[in-house]
Each structure stands twice: as structure tokens, then as C-alpha cells.
Amino acid sequence: MARLAGCGVFDPAGDRVGKVIDVLVAYRKSGAPKVSGLLVEISGRRRVFVPISRVTSINPGQVITTGLIDLRRFTQRGQEVRVIAEILGRKVRLLDGSGEAGIEDLAVEQNKTRDWLISELFLRRPKTSSSPFARGATLFAAWEQVTEEDKGEEGQSAQALIATYSEMRPADLASALLDLPDERMIEVAEELDDERLADVLEELPEDEQIDIITELDDERAAEVLDLMEPDDAADLMANLPAERTEAILDLMDEEEADDIRMLMQFDEFTAGGLMTTEPIICAADATVAEAMALIRRKDVSPVLAASVFVTLPPYEVATGRYLGTVHFQKMLRYPPHERLGSLLDTELEPVKADTHISVIHRTFANYNLVALPVVDDQHHLIGVVTVDDVLDHLLPDDWRTEEEAH
Image 1 (spheres, one colour):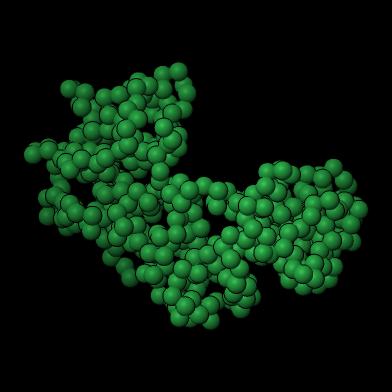
Image 2 (image 1 turned 90 degrees about the vertical axis):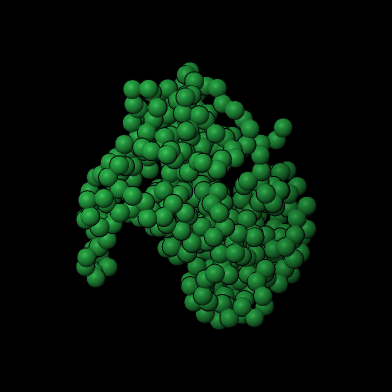
């Protein structure tokens, strides 16, 4: 069942209608739980319930349905339990007296009456070594061979959920976390490694960001915020108490902390409040090959890799005088030894930090921009507004969870 998370859901014609988020099972008075259906995400990030009776085929990487989908928003019923969000990781006790184990996965099979039932559990026993790399032995067991230690949410380990979510993109993982109860969301978020948590926090709504950061100690919060984009980190910290903000900034990398302090000075609805302070900056005599090497770095986001900004020395934000922009697509048309100074787009006018967000929106729309440079009164490059940050402000606050428009 764990492999179904993220699988495409298709109609009989082969058209994709959504993806699987979870599998729902219903407990019975006796025997193994029965599968009642799938929780599926369709367009507009709406979650809907697809009864198992409308599933005609389950194959590796895809689920085929009859094509009939009830578009009403999913509401979990009292007797239903979500396999991925609630069962994986639960503790069970083996009835043969050999001890307890955790559920790492489970299989379902169709019986003679065409009901889908949990048929087999893949279990892992507690580790017997103190080594951090040690893992307990694994075994298979039928549902009838175990008894659950606890059917509540607290019975499931956060690590089991994280293993299931390991292949998800940060935006999809953020959506999955929003689907969990608040306490469960925070527990799972705390178990993520720092880099993964930083990526997810950038995708979460403001309230959930604050809930998670509030539960982290100052040292870990500083590590995670260090890994976030400076503009996202500044937006988050602007909503924390001033004393905690300063305590975290004091623990952060000095250069990152200085960038965040600068960004927090600007109004949220201005270019300064939107911009990031980590664009790719080059000298005018740098070659196309040198610029392309900077673009290829793994830590450069696609939106920042679309343009290189050329300044006078020193080549850092808030210090080098802005000369112009060289677009990635233009660099592809020239030989590696070509100097960036001869490829400058000087028609793209930079904006000041106090430029209102409404002007930013119109500028991006009028000139089909991906990034827009921001300069101070001395024409020093101080940051770049990117299209993803513009979209975040154009969309409603609850766009990640709201239903598809009527």
C-alpha cells in the first residue's frame, strides 16, 4: 500500500484524473480490515473519495477507475482509517508470543466476494543493537497473527510516514502534511532532516510555518532558517516574537543573518519585501562558460538560474553597481568565450526597494519576466524579485487547501 502514494489515477480512456494520496480501510468486528476506497487528489488540489468498487485495476505506478468520480470534498468517516497517514508505523504484538514489531507496509488482496482485505503485514522488530545504523529484523505476518498495541494516532511513528513521503517534492509533501491533524503534522515535521524541513517550510502557509518553528529549539530553528531562501526566512521571522527572532539570528550564519535583517526592514508589499538576496552575480568581463558554471550549481533554484546579473566590483548584493542582465537563453546562442558585457539587456529597468507590489505585478506581466532586479539609491544591486514570489502574493492565502473554483 505504501507504494500507492503518488500513483496516477486514470479513467478507462487512459486520461489522468488525479493521484493517490492514501488508502482508506474500515475495521470490522472480526477479520482483517476491508478497503473502502482511495483518497485521491484531483485538479485544484481537491481531495475526493473514490470507492474501491470504482477501481478496476491496480498496477505498478497506476490505478485505473471506471471514470466516475464524486467531486464532493473528502470527509473521513468515523469507522475509516487512513493506511499511510495512520497505520504505517503502528506497533503490533505477535500472538505467538515472540514480541512486538512495527508495521512498515501492508498488502491487500481481493477475496471471493470481490472485497479487498488486508492480507499480509510487513513488520520490523525493535533493533537489538545500540548502533545508530542497526535495524531490527523483518518478517511477514497475516493480520490474524497480530494484535494492535494502540489504534490511536499516537501509535504510529513519524519515521514511517517520512519513509512513505521520501520521494515527494517539497510542495507535495507540504500538502500531505496539511492533511494531517495539527499535532501529527508537527511531529512529522520535527523528524524531517534540516534541509528537507527548510524546503517544506517554504511551501507551507504562514500559520503552519509558525506552529512548526515554535516547537523547535533556537539552535535547530537557526539551522533550518539558514537553509531557507532569505526572503522566505525573513517573512517567517517577521511573525515571531522580537526576542526569539534576535536569539535565532544570533545563532545563524552571520552573512545569512545580515541578509534577513535587511529584508525585514522592508514592507511586505514592496519590492524589498518580495526580493531574494541570492541572485547569480558576475563581472562584465566574465565569459559565458563561467556564467554557465554558476548556473549549473545544484543549490541554485531554476528561477534564479534563468538570469545572470552583471555589476561592477565587488560582486555582492548591496555593494556592486548594477550594469544589466544576461538571460540564460541568450547565453545559449553564443560561444563559451563570449564576454557577458557584450550580451547585456540594458532595457530592463531595475526597480527601487520601495516599489509597490502592484507595480511589480504589472511589470512582470508587461515584459514576461522571470526575475526583476532591485537597486538602492546609488544603483547598487540589492536583490531580485522572482516570479514564484509574485505568484505567492497574487494567490489567496489558502490556495494550497481551497477547493477548486465552482
